[in-house]
Image (cartoon, rainbow, N blue to C red; front, side):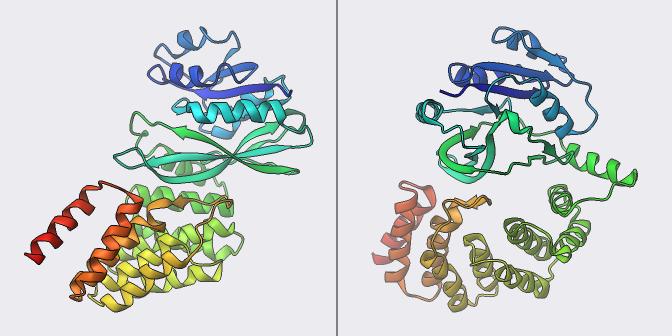
Length: 357
């Protein structure tokens, strides 16, 4: 059986760190905590789990801190988590089985990261991350912000999920500030850096600059296919906010250059026509989603609601607008298959009952 080092970087995580460590302490063989400047009780709490607690001066570089944590590992494989991550019980059991049976020829294991949830706890956003890696390969973290572990070799996908249970809002503007600081010092952004810098500009409502840098990213023609599609999607939102309908449509269609249509792209196209009250063309795009095969093993962002619930709800409204109540009810019922007892679905059911009276 392989051995595992857990390597984490933390700062002021006293409210969540014990929850995280409790969920993983009986899976890993070593816990390494690198603190980047806590002023609360984080370090005192983690010392109840491990004596391998190290200080690292924060230099606005997440990769530098993570690489330092990895340098302290001594076991066969390295696992990384953030303090507000947990491993749920069903995934803990799967993880224990993986550890028991993992072939030493495997270099890295990708695990699904569940990061978005609706009010009922259903997963709405997930993607794969490079979660478990062979220590001897000395893989390095790359990029100062939105860092990633550059793995290669025999990489496998696992059905184990890491659950992100964020308890507080991220520091507003922190990542954008790091990017701007690095750019002011003359750092040239990689294609990935351009993509994530544009996303940070978008999150901070700097839409004109976001548009500029998303386009700059796409113009490199060096982006990962999933980032290209995601950039088109977010760029379309920017254009919509700026009321630039022509470029909104153009960039959504551009996404088809990279791969088969994605659910969120088709729904955005449906919304484009829906907002123009062109319900027949909106129906085409919403229906197309339901004919597509939802990605399962790809490493890109999966916006789960866009692959079933949202297009069904929108089809319900479109058919109602066209006076086809039978089809409207049909798609409301299909939406209920994705989210039983959803308030919007129940509202529609009552609406259709009143129409029939």
